[in-house]
Length: 162
Image (cartoon, rainbow, N blue to C red):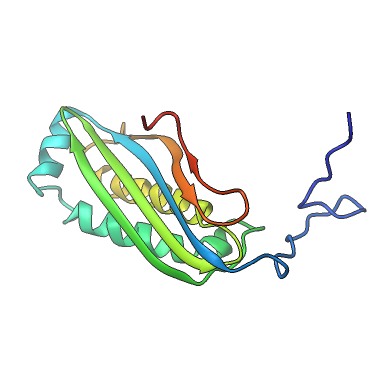
């Protein structure tokens, strides 16, 4: 079996950013999701927009959008991308769960998977921050890539989506 070359390690085993200058510029899209689970009472307050810190959904949406734009500063080997769009949706799943979905799009040389994943993770953290005054047992979990397209590897769709 041939030894697989590590793309983010140089010949001296030091971390490096992959050179993508030879890759084609294509439209790329990624969708990721996560769940935020809380006590039913907290969920009710969230749904009624009555938590003490204010509008949890809008703060979390903005946090996720900002996180996607800053992914290259947070994840050391990610490339800065020309992101053309980011959306973050928060959906209630009674009796105690919020599903966060982020879509990131770019026309670039490398994918936007990390941007979509970072968006949902940080949006989830913002939900926690906004809810923690009444519920410190909030759990952020199930962060996953649902879909990606663009580039040489083509389309990926999670079997968990179907």
